[in-house]
Length: 455
Picture 1 (tube, helix red, strand yellow):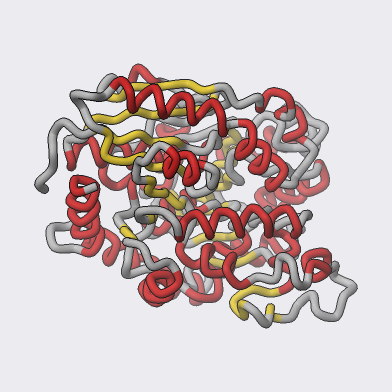
Picture 2: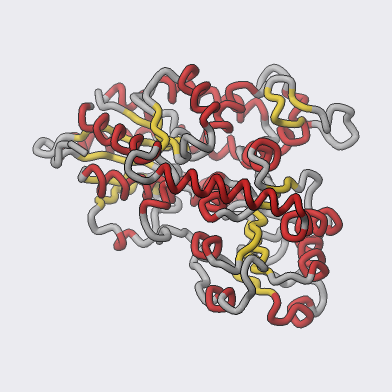
């Protein structure tokens, strides 16, 4: 891969686990395969942990004033509120930081800045400072296609439908893959989300190119459509985490003791449950999960983040004597080394919130999914998993023990589950081939490195 060894790339992730991880992974890929020098600009809030693990990177912190509203994260589920705040409060600090970096690098020219697509304000700053801006979009291609079509502004009432409404179970006319009950989960503020999505998509189209953490064989038809809608270079070089060993950029301390416990479980026997780094559930939902896991009788590893259960610090609202009755069949931890858990021979099913990183990691290891999406892109991912790729079951009606038990039995004990496993194993093989010399992701990486070198 030909490149100028003295060029620097400046990367700027959104300050959330699901955005920081892929940006750091991309930085590692570009450093290793393009021999670019790397600077990571980051907010004070959720600054990337373990920076000493990246001695080959330069880290620059900027003020974000996020502390003014961060305490609301626990009770305000409107993601557009926080994203709008960040896109306003970071403008001046980012401009000053980027201008300073450009002044410092006379002997080391900056090739481009790569920002999270969610930081849409950065296009105007890059244009002002006359530097190319590329974007990293941390969702699947299908999610962006859905965003271009869903009626955020024209039919806002459809985002507020409940089970009592006749349209609740119907397909959305503008994007028939989705049901109205799916888009009701995407946002509680369709006006704010529509404004954010519109700004993000417009500035993606204005960028110098889009980098995707996906692979062509998974979303080939979506890539064809994206290439028509977004007439800038598109690079599908994912999955990023497959280029390197398991990521060390987790914002939460991982409990690695569970790997030795997994070693004692039979192959493909264990249900792995994790709802990600942001989702919250009620005490009643928490107990429904517990009752279902107890009754199903299979080994389970359950990640319960401190504060995940509303009104609880950790697991104090478990049913009486739950841990005693489960015994050695189950483990509850605060966080796990997820990639290693999914790759473990004992893992047979992943019950997930369907964040894109988790979905892609499950595909990478050939583990069928049970989907419990909460907000933003997660319901879109879940619909692709269950209805398009047919590699999992969507718990469409929430966390209720009978539905949970049915879903687990479907994935772990039925002919339908075997077919899901066959389909996801086939996707895993295509994914692995895409990373080999001549594969689609490998070629896309070569194209990206060459493209950045010409900017």
